[in-house]
Picture 1 (cartoon, rainbow, N blue to C red):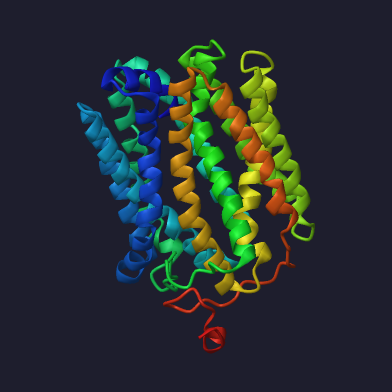
Picture 2: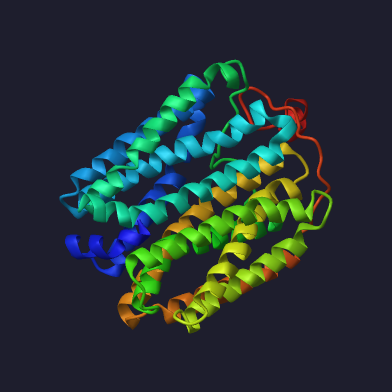
Length: 384
């Protein structure tokens, strides 16, 4: 979406604040619709649940080609978010069910896959819109990848062997650790991490166009490069730290580098641009993966890890959805992105406070998961 913001804003007569809702609405839908994933998995299983999510994504993406009005783009974006919520929420359960002995490796590959998909889309969307002479057609064309995913996922049914696996419950609003200080630290870190990420995806290219005096294609290329660097960092940083080392060191270092990247773009977006892109690539790529591992690193057991993750998921996506809108509002008021990205730099730096108060536990083997709940079967009576 980011490389196509300007033509979308012009054709649909949207303000910067309004166009940010194209990113905000699917993000909100991802949080709101996530509980559906647990119900769907219990009804039709993990494999068919992911397949359903992919189908929803494909149909809603194709609907973007109709494009005639802002309401259609916003509603299709919401349905895309719902499909992502179903598939994305079930994939960690797939990893735990099928790859329990290699969960760290597979999760790292899965996380890097998210970044890789964003990099390809950011780099190709603007040239694709030029080639098709239509930004709605460029957005709708991504339904082809969803269809390819459907075919590949359906073909992998026998090799994945998920039909007889446990149906792990997904996020739920009941039993969340609202009174836990540690849960709130994880939630704050997850919320800021997600907010910064969606602000990057939504506003980096417009910033490079408005304040950095670059073309949409050039800005999209820089966004692609940044995400590719992030993908490498998502895999490299956790590997360099290792399972036995204190993750607070890596969290603090990547947070500081991320803050420098945002500060550089706020102060001098047209000078040293590659330095700031490199900082956000290395810093935020590593930070993104390390934050995702926190519920496991600080929790006592699988049940507590699930509750920490659920709380961070709901609150984090709400904050992530609001952040791009606030950046857009500041852009409308100020006429540039300097103040907005300066505040994002400060927000990133403030993450150091909860990081320093984290208590990282030693990594233990995953607990056995009961068929109908995320609480370990052996410890359910104690939990109740």
